[in-house]
Length: 78
Image 1 (cartoon, rainbow, N blue to C red):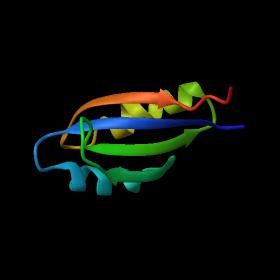
Image 2 (image 1 turned 90 degrees about the vertical axis):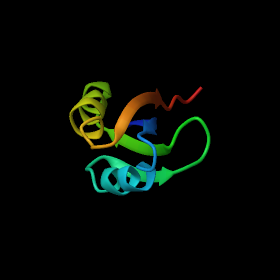
Image 3 (image 1 turned 135 degrees about the vertical axis):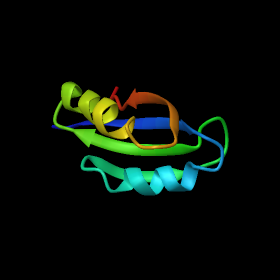
Image 4 (image 1 turned 120 degrees about the vertical axis):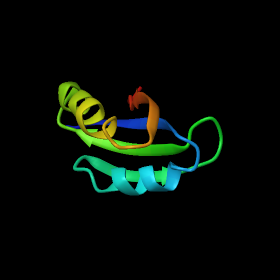
């Protein structure tokens, strides 16, 4: 079983499309789209466990140029 999450991203002005394109190629990212509203990019990601998800967000996603803030929302099955 894998851990899945949505990562909501705010970017610098005018960088949403570039950020979404850069993130889409990262291992563990299944979808990255630029959107309108309070967040600029929404990413769907998956990892083997919560620790690996954290490493994906902190080490790879947050290092993409143009990102100002992220919010990770793990998917739960109730």
